[in-house]
Each structure stands twice: as structure tokens, then as C-alpha cells.
Length: 366
Picture 1 (cartoon, helix red, strand yellow):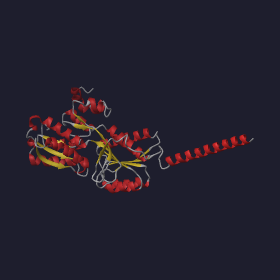
Picture 2 (tube, helix red, strand yellow):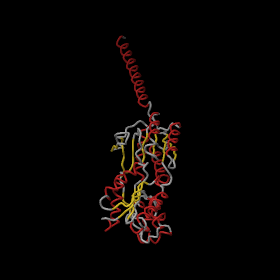
Picture 3 (cartoon, helix red, strand yellow):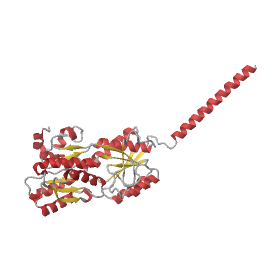
Picture 4 (tube, one colour):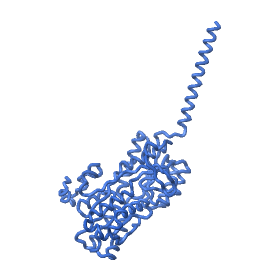
């Protein structure tokens, strides 16, 4: 009887301990999950402007698609475009904070002006991913292309296009907006290739990257230097290249000097096909968008970025920012088929409209 009683007591104690253990495990799991977000995330996306085709046509839908994939369709993207107004973008950050987004992806109109808004978000526990441009303030992550390399690629291509005039020829430099830190990196990379080889007759920092401002600057350069004294033009992007080429044509030039670009915009690709623009820099948007989405979702869930971001960069205000840098490609008439068409950015039909059909046929784009 005594043995039976002891056995029963032991069994009861074991059950009790098991129950306690189970309760403890449940409590531990609850504590572990406490504070962690589920897939039903709300990610804010702030893009800087809608003049450049990439933002609305590529970046926004690519980021939305990737966040949906990462969250099993439960994640929501809250979108706003600042239309090149830094004050508006600051207000948009305030709205995102009010709406209690779980993370922010921000492509800053003005990298310095955005810093206070980034701090406000961080103070409310909202992590911030700087997208395409390195924003100031306490950002948590950054993804872009190797922007200095972009300038190197542009500079090398322009020298190639100049041929004999690569030694001592005169060029005009049409750089981007001073509010964009990327513009300084593009310029730095390009100058590393061009300085000491060509004469820089005129150099401009183009306000707001606007094609019409580039057009006015180019008209000024033509007036100051003479239309026959410009051997080539460094243009930091395709939109400005369009304004530059309009000015060159307006000056009555029968043979256009080589003009660089960036972003592989459809109009830029078509100008390359037509022989009006020498090159662009093709930046595969999908991997950049994917990196931004992956980092935003991970940060929103309180996860580390070690498996996503393999590099780090320093901003003027933050050291060691986890970073994903995506490589770039020099796009000329020789590799249109193997880049933007192969990657599904554009179809042959989109590029080769009736206006460009004959030029496309010569390049074998059918």
C-alpha cells in the first residue's frame, strides 16, 4: 500500500512538473514572440519625384510585389511621392508616423533635409531604410547602386566615344542636383576618368535634375563656348540628356557630339538606337527593390540584417550602415538586346515604334 501511495504521489508530481514545464515553455514562447511583428505589416514607401520614369514604372511595383511575396500577401505598402518637394516629403513622413507604419523605405528628395524626419520615425520605433540615396539621420539600412562606379562607367564610355578627341577635346559636364548625394558620387567617378584627359569647358549642377534646366544650361554652354567647340557632353542621367540633345539640335548641329546618360529610360534607349545619345547606365531595378523590401520587412519584424546586407557605408551622420550595393552596366546600342530586353524591362515593340523601326532593323532588334 505504501509503495502504491508513493508511486501515485510520484506520478502526480511528474504530471505537475510536466504541466509547470509546459506552462513555462508557453510563457517563454510568449515572451519571445512579444514585440515581434507578424506578416501583416504596414511598410511606408516614400519616393522623391515622378519626372524620372523609374520610380513609378519600376521601383514602386517591384517593391510592392516583393513585400507581398515576403509576407505571404499580408503586407501592405503605403505609398507617397514627394514630386521633388523636400517639405512635402517631411510632411509625408509625419503622416506615415501617424499611420503607425512598421518600417519606412525612403528615397530622399534632399538627403540633409530628411534627417529630422528620419529621427522622428526612429523616436517612434519605426526603422528606416534609405533607398537609392543615402539619407542623413539615424537610418537603419541602405541599398543603392555603386554610385561612384556609375560615374566611372559614364566617364570611360565618353572617352571611348570621343576617340581621337579623348586627348585634349572639350566637353560640357551636366551633373545632377546638389541636394542629391548620389550626384556628387557620379561626378567624382566621372572626373576620375576625365580629368587630365579632356578640357571641361563648362560644368553645371542641374537644379532638381530637370530636363528643362539641363536644356537651359546647355544653351548657355553653346553660347559661351560655340557650337563647334563642344566635342562631347557628360550628362548624369537620361532625362537631362534629352534636354541637352534638344538644345544641341536647336543650335543647328548636323552631327551631334556623344552624350552620356543613366537609368536606361525608354526615351534614352530610343535615342541610343537612333544614334542621338551614345550610352546610358543600366541599373537593374529588381535586385535593388528586392533588397529594400527584404531589409524593411526584416527590420519591421525585429530581425537582424546579417544575411541580407554584406557591406556597410558611412553617412555624414551615421557610421556602419548595413548596405546592399547592386552592380551597374554600360548600355550602348551593342547590348540593348542582352540587357533591357532580356531582363524584360522593355519589349522590342516598346522600343521600336514606327519612328525608330529603321534604326532598330539596322541593330537587329526585331
